[in-house]
Image 1 (tube, rainbow, N blue to C red):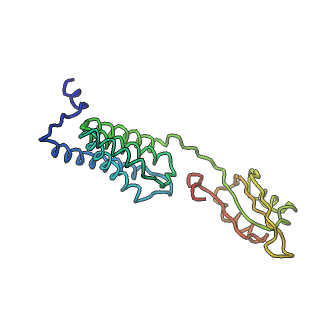
Image 2 (cartoon, one colour):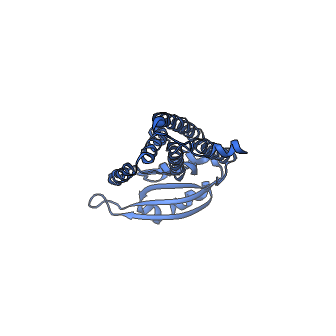
Length: 236
């Protein structure tokens, strides 16, 4: 029990061992950051994966460890560091809430290593990544839906006549209009166009290409998009 308690206690740093502490803190933060980044890569789903973001997770851990080592050295350094960070404006948009969680994980692990809580950094990263792996392989939170999202742009006459709705009835078990946006003619004397969005459920999940081809054959479709996999909706 005493050994376990000592694992989560900070390591005292003397003036003569400051250099050793800094090297050890950077080494631990690098190893923990690498473990977090590899686990993030293995458990990532979707199409928004970024190599630079994965590399940034490792760098965040090292930078956090370095900043906490500076804060622990002198109070004036801590004040100057806070002032410097207040000037920086971070403009990178994190699209996924899971990405934000990994940013905080790497930041906290790096801070723990910088303050000398090496055991806390390692055990905390291990526990968080085990939970991430569990959530990935159990499919926790997934919602498997057979509904599809159909978006297309066509002439207004096709929508008003009800021909599009009749065609969808041939392929779809259920269809729901989400939005219909009418745009004025692009040229004088031309016909107005309509941007339609439907939530549909096909009779056969494999008939998506046939539905798209039928719409193109019967109507003047200017643009069409059928979202089959809801998990990849972020790029639709």
